[in-house]
Image (cartoon, rainbow, N blue to C red; front, top):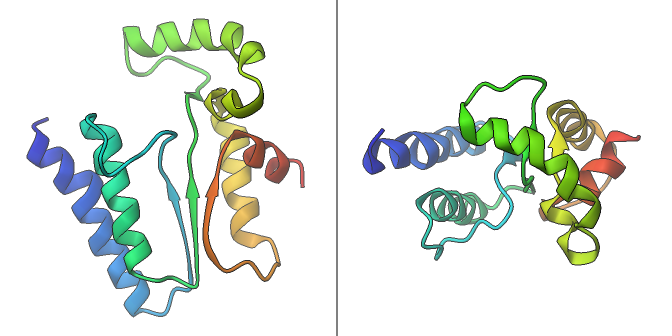
Length: 143
């Protein structure tokens, strides 16, 4: 896929959707993004995600939850060699990712999905932009 197609799918379509959500009265929006996103990144993937997040912030949802996982671990390899290596290496690396580096720990798709669901249904008065990382996913998934 070319750069323009990627941006059209990963940023433009999502912004169109969220704009429609905002117009329809949605007050809380959740986005599965990525660790290390930045609108100024040299990486197309991280820059596009960062630009998307900036656009979502501009929509001024009452509550915006941005999920920033590192490696999402799946039960099977669906994407070839790079995912095969990730599935093998991350369990060895995770124990040394401590302190401020714990946001780079891998997370199972099941745990992440549970955290996203719990964040959506939890009854609290949270407002504004909330950026969530690995430790937040673990806390939410245990509720």
